[in-house]
Image 1: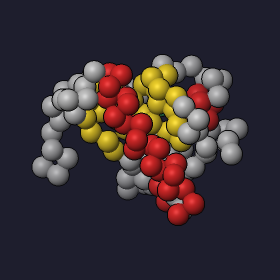
Image 2 (image 1 turned 90 degrees about the vertical axis):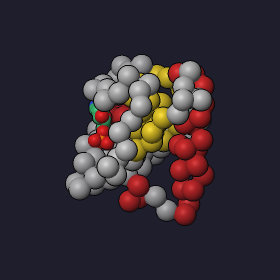
Image 3 (image 1 turned 90 degrees about the horizontal axis):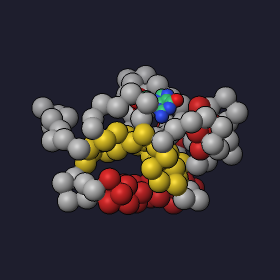
Length: 116
Ligand code: DGP
């Protein structure tokens, strides 16, 4: 359920350094190496799933865990009331760089509306 060549699998296993913000049996959340906002955290499944394209109806629980981690992280970061943005990039056009499913958690500043 892990990919030996995957940097996020190595972070989850503690084999590569990262500032872990939240971790449970299903998901891990750690600070992005190249933050695009004052708070930029990546929420990832502990199991190696390359992207949203590989999610099946078998994975609805893990997909739910990814989203359900967001309010916990917001509480930890003290921005539950202010709010935040969640983004999942998929594939080439989605500009996904790391092929381990992740949800970007962005906050700490008012965001521009993504659709203009
Ligand atoms: P995406 O383009 O959606 O695949 O975003 C991947 C993000 O992963 C990008 O914002 C930078 C971040 N990232 C890449 N390598 C590392 C790493 O080794 N550690 C951490 N913490 N973040 C990384």
